[in-house]
Length: 103
Image (cartoon, rainbow, N blue to C red):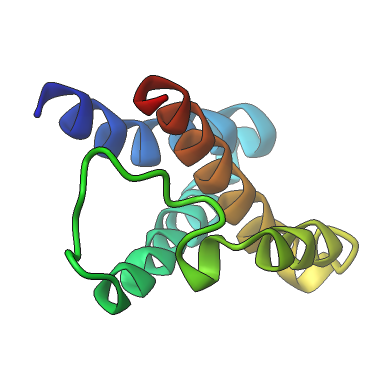
């Protein structure tokens, strides 16, 4: 349970730190965009059970698939979507770290 709570906190804390470091005085918009990438977890609604603390989401959920992660890297090349792509990749990285604890 504590691991899950820490995991969720990190999904907001890390984008906050990245936004503050990368955008100095104009950090709020990048932080909000990166925080909104949490919506990628809506694909958990397709799973049964919806939440399983012992399941690695990477490669399991559609928006956490390796194809989707490659698309997020590609979006880094587009200035319009760069901040969202960064948020999505931070999200996938944190989920990947969480997967290490499971296995």
